[in-house]
Every structure is written in structure tokens, then in C-alpha cells.
Image (cartoon, rainbow, N blue to C red; front, top):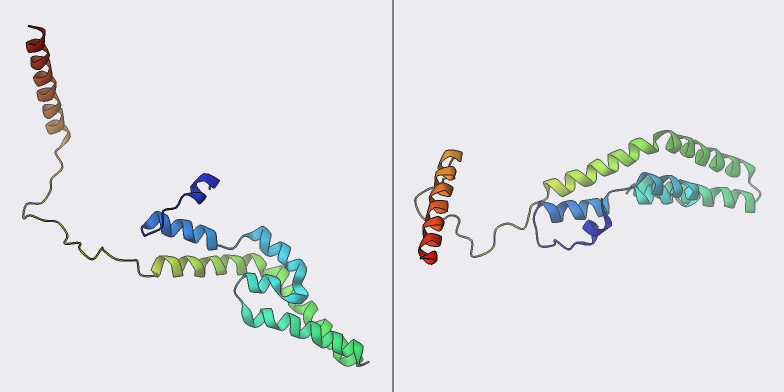
Length: 158
């Protein structure tokens, strides 16, 4: 999307405003992959709105640090193995997780109730439905307008 369109303020309702808000909230693949480098903090899981797994990474990292600090090799290796397993699973499934997160965000945006009609909105007034003239009728109206303007031009010339 062109940056000029992103900067355009269409707030107040409507499909265009909702699509602009949605475009700002969708998760980007490059960002998620870069945040995967900060896996001990669980940054990529926070980015994808997965708080339970995001908390698991720092907890396991702290467990490994505690095992190393207190000289408990079983705790150190167990925590490191769990972090490594989570990391392998995340590398294998990150693309699917990004797509799932974006799908949830789209569903929430499109299924959320809109602002509704203005308070003084009464709908169409009058009993007759509005009918758009057909192509032939529009041509006839244009010919009549052209003849009328030609007659008016002739009168001014005289």
C-alpha cells in the first residue's frame, strides 16, 4: 500500500477506515522472523498475541540460568532442552502462526459491529423508489439538452 494512502485519515467509519486500521494491526512476516532471534524473551510469541507460550520462554530461560547458577545440571539441561524443542517447533510453524494470527485479526475487524447510522438518520424519504434511467433514456436526455443549448446559442447570436 502506498504510504500516502496509509497517512490519509478516514476515521469515523466505513470500510476504507476499517481496512486502514486492519492494515496497521496485521502482523508482518519479516518482523516475526526477526523477533524470533529474541526467543529467550519470547518476543515473537508476544508479537503474535500468544501470551502463554510467550511466558514459557522466559520462564524456561530463567530455569536454565538458575540451574547453572545453583549448580543443578539436571535443571539446566532440562530447561535448555525444553527451550530448544520450543524453538524447533516455532521455526517449523512460524509461517502458520503468522497466518493464523492475521486471520484472527481480520475476523475480529470484519465481524465487529460498526458505528451504525447517525442519530438523525431517517432512511429514504418519500414513497417513490429512486430509479436510475437506462442508457437509451440518458441518450435522449443528452440530445434534448444539446438541442436546448444550441437553440439558446442561436438566440444569443441574433
